[in-house]
Amino acid sequence: MKKNFSLSDFDFTLPDELIAQHPAAERSASRLLDGRGSTIADRRFANLPDLLLPGDLLVFNDTKVVKARLFGQKASGGKLELLIERVLPAHADAGHEVAAHMKVSKKPLPGAVLQMQGGFTATLLGRWPEAHGPLYRFRLSSDPYALMAEFGHVPLPPYITHTDSADDEQRYQTVFAKNPGAVAAPTAALHFDEAVLAQLEAHGIARASVTLHVGAGTFQPVKTEIITEHTMHFERFDVPAATHEAIAACKARGGRVVAVGTTTVRALESSAKFGPSCDDTNIFITPGFEFRVVDLLLTNFHLPRSTLMMLVSAFSSHEHVMALYRHAIEQRYRFFSYGDAMLLAREAPAARH
Image 1 (spheres, rainbow, N blue to C red):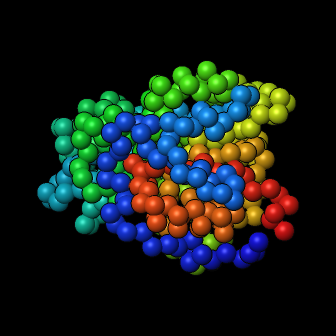
Image 2: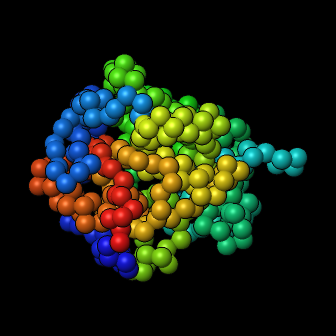
């Protein structure tokens, strides 16, 4: 295996028309590229229960996307946009505080009161998490979750060109979303519907969940050619005790742990690497990473030159993943958040040397 990867090693050319702008008519009607072995197979997502074995364990990310995009204006009348990255915990002398990305032509100064669409205000307090942090800290005039629910917009990724609609509000959310806090969907899980979940249960395939609140940093481009110089964003996560127990039971019976999405991989491998007390991770998984938990990965197709391309290449070898992407482009698979999926097996450790 090549030891020193550069950013350009994760590049590929994707025709614009393969970027899915809308989801498939039905969640499980998407295609599934079976890339578990040397033979590539084109399947349908509805075939997934037949590709897994009784005793396997599917682990989902149960985060819930919030309508985190808010619009407003400065006192001068200049338009701005906030993307709420996280709602900050309240303490004795503060409440309703959030950390957010701000898109505006000229940044206001701390203390500025912004008038937001919907009639509420957002007061700029400074940068976050420190004086030169990447985000901005605001105090909203009311409960952030209630304001987002009433006045916010679905934070569709930048490569989806239409404005959010009622359909996006439903489809850019998994059917088992439970814990609000994500600004991007765990997209591999968008393919699951109640019919597929029932078939999986009937096949004797167990389920467990983690929570990782996907941040906008998931779309942050890598700007360094030497990939080890890139700094990952932090995301909040939780792996419940019940999930640790389910994983141990799965391994004991000879089953396979199947991570649904890269966010689930990051949560499981962070917990294994840093311990169960870890609840905020910026783990950067690149080729050479030693996986401790995940055996199979169900994932969508990712942006070129992205950290997620590096993660899947670490999981199933760079050469194999790039071959799968070439096949997917030739066969006109649909890419990114509303696109199709693929199933990968973890590269055997012996194959890495």
